[in-house]
Every structure is written in structure tokens, then in C-alpha cells.
Length: 612
Image (cartoon, rainbow, N blue to C red; front, side, top):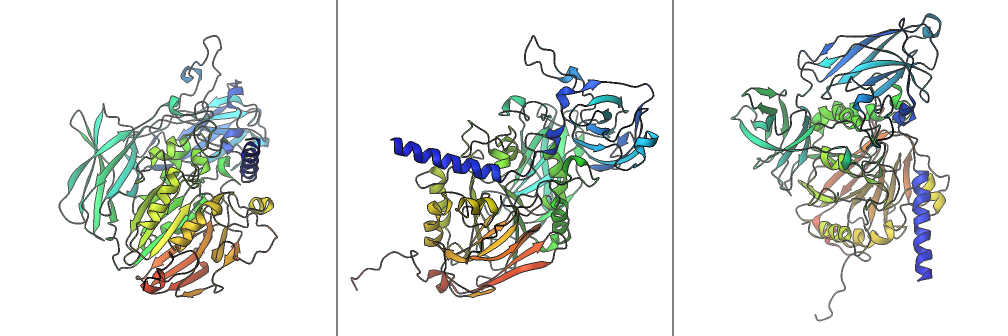
């Protein structure tokens, strides 16, 4: 028993060390000591915001101009954007009856230094700033602080700014349903079930429209598992609605609008969107899928909130939008927006990806920054989710899992089968998730769906990232040991991971040995699985080890994403594109017949009978 305890402790220490190594800096909003804020209002200081009413033409994103002045300017003065606009102590929950709440108990949704657009601010005391706001179900105010981020002193507060309808339905997210001919639409609004009925009006493009009801979810502060999600990071999430559009014709184009029927009989509508229904499983047609992890969000206005934290996020988003007509499905495999307990950031993220997610299915996987929190059943007992413990990811996005708290699922797209794993829950042999993985891999008909893809956030296969290499594991401890026999037995073509913020591709490999030395054109059986790290979606980059391994074919220390194009049942194109320009920097092709999938290789076929 002592030996088992020692082994368990050793595994825990390795996991903890790796987790610390993959930490990529604190959430920028956490740098603000908002609980320490004091009042230092100055009659001669001011902040003026214009326009005061946004979204008069039903826009969900608008720019606001700020003019401000301070009689005692300093280089560490900053502007905080607060929503709701009233952010004083009257809004603070009283955690202990004998303790007065702080002056301010909620973090701003973004911030910028006062001299950002006005380099002479320290000399003149006057500044000018343009900030981008999205419709987030409440009004806004802008506060000028002195004292830096760590000891903020409130100097002046602006007039209030609001969208014409802050409750409007916004930021639709498409996702494939549990059936091949079903599409789900999830969106956010300020209308609860006691105020309105939520629905989607949809139908074939140019044809008759029907209405499908939507279910409505929300959650409160007590659902969060810890700080900052329960404290300074808390913000009311509004209401999240999901409607199920069923019995779709394969590849048909449909239009849809989000709707709310208020109980006074009036209607509130979104603008019209459109999508193309998924192909029938096994259908022989052109099918294009984009995969990446760890994108996060960024601010188009240059807010300091994400400077140097997720530099590539906007570039990745921009390139996907540019090529959207050539993309059928997006898979974002964990570390979605790095809110880390600052709830407002999920709205910011869904607004950023809306041009993509409203047009093609945007499927997600769970990562450490969505799920991990001590004592909540996550496989890793760290605090990476900032107290969210999976609630935001499980509610803001739909996935066709049996239980969204267990974030593993399969989804088919024509000739593709995707098995999406939740690395924040135990995947080892004998667990519930291991049984799911084997069933997902074993149940696919490879004659109809020849392209079998395994997806996970953490690197369960191979990576030359520094921390994995320093530990000698070159991947998540216990990952390959638990799963490689399944990849080999069921002949998984490609396994894709995030978590490590770079790009890397291996040879087809089994048990640390390359099973095919070709690098760009594979004909016939692979005899192993190609492992790809695609964690360069946007978050700060991860260095590679200087150690050289025979299995690492291509490495790139940059932001990017991968694209899979299935031309038919025999031909697949893999491309790695950089987010900076959308150009291809690595690629390979697979050409084979069905008999090549059936062909036996090491540990992939049962023993033959000698009866004949």
C-alpha cells in the first residue's frame, strides 16, 4: 500500500509540475486590485462618453468616444469600463454581516491606460480614447482611476451609455445535434422565461418558414465553484437559449432568425442568418473542417486587458472569416476564451466569433481553463478555470454529449468521424470515458466514413513542448500508455491536440516508432497515427525543446490552425495555415482504398484462425 501511495504521489507531482509549466500568465483583469479601490473624486476631473445610445440600427457592436481630464495626471492613470453602469457598493453581496462590503466589488469588463491614445496626457491632463462595446444586456459607465491597477483611486465617472435594446437576442452559435440531420442554435438574450417565449424562425432559403421553440438556461453566482467567478469576476450571464432544427435535407441552405415573443404580444427579432445543413454520414462530397485550440479572445480597440496575452486571437478569427465560404465545420478543442472566472469575457468571445459560429457549426471541447478547480471532480486539481468549474462552457455552447458535465462526445460530418475527448476527466482504462472512446472508435463504418479523427485538449499523444520534454514524457503522463493501443487497433488516422501553444506534426507513429517515413504523400496504409499539436489559435506561444526526436516532422513557433479537406473516400488533404496571412506552411495528402484501411498491421487485427 505504501508503494501505491508513493506512485500516486509521484503522478500528482508530475501533473502539478506540468500544469505550472503550461501556465501562460494571469488573466489580465486579475491584475486590478478592485477590492482596494478608494474614492478620490475631483470636482475638476471628468469623463464624457458619446454617443449615449448605441445600436439604433440594431448593431450589436459599437464604438464609443471618451474625452477625459484630470488635474493630477499620472502615467499609471487608467480607464475602466463597467457594466452594469452602477458599480458601487450597493451592488455588492454581503458575505459576512459584520463586514462592510468594499467600495467596488466587480471588475471592469475591460480597461485601458489614460495615455494610450494621448501621449501628452501626463503634461496636459487631457485624454481621448475610442473603445469598442458589445451588447451585453446592461448599460455602461467609464471610470477614471489614479493609483495604477494595484491601488486604484476613483477620480471621475462618466455619463451612462446603453444599447437601444440591451436585452436583444445576440451571438448565435450553431452546433451539430445528436442526429446527422439536426442543427442546434444557441444564443444569449436578456429575456427570461417569465418575460418572453424564445424560438427560431427558419426554413429553406427562399421557402416557407417554421418556428421551433427554444429551451432556456441560466445560472447564478452560487453555481460558481470559487473566486473570482463567485466574487469580482461575477456578472449576470443573462439567458442562454437553444433550439433544435430537425429533419434537415443534406447540404441544403437554410435561413434563420432568433425570436422572442414578449407576453404583451410584441416580437423582438435578430437579423437573418443562414447555414448549410450537414451531409449524410458517408456522403461522397467535398467536406472541409478547421481545427485549432487555445484561441482565446482579443480586443480590437487595443484594450490592455489582453495585450501580450492572446496576440493571435483576432488574426485567427479574421482568417477564418475570410475563408468562411470554404469551411464547413469548426472544431475549437479547448481553452475557449480564457475568461478564468471573469464571466463578462464569454460574451466578448461569442461576439468575436459570431460571424463564424452563426454560419457553420462551431463545436468545442473542454480544456483546463474551462473546467479545472480543486475538489470538483476534475482530473487535475488546479485552479485554471477561475472558479467556473465547467459551468460556462457547458451552458454557453451546445455539444451533443449525453451529459454536458462529462464533456466527451462524437460527431459525424459526411466522411468524417470525430471522437472528442474531455482530458479534464479521467480517460484511463477502466473509466467511463475510456469506454466511450473505444465505442466511438469501434462503431464507425470505415467503408462509409474512412477518415477517423481523435480530438483532445491536452496532448495525449506526442509534443516537443518544453515542459513535456523536460519531464521526459513528450506528452501528457499516462496519455499514450492508456490510449495508443486503441488508436492502433481502430486505425485512427490523425489525433489533434491543443494545450501546447504552437504547431507540431509527427510521423505516423506507434509506440514511439515511426511506422511510415514519408512526410508529404501517404499512399496505402499509414500503419500508425499522425499526431498533431494545433494549440496556436491565439494564446501566448510555447517554446519547443532543443532536443531532436525522430518522430517530430514539422514544428512552427507561431499562431495558426489546421484544415482537413476530404475530396472523396480515398483522398484527404491536411493543411497547416498561419493566422498572420492564411497561407499554407505545412501539408500532406493521404490516398488509399478501403482495403488499405482493412489491411492488418502491428496490433491492429486479431489473430487468424488456423481452421482453414
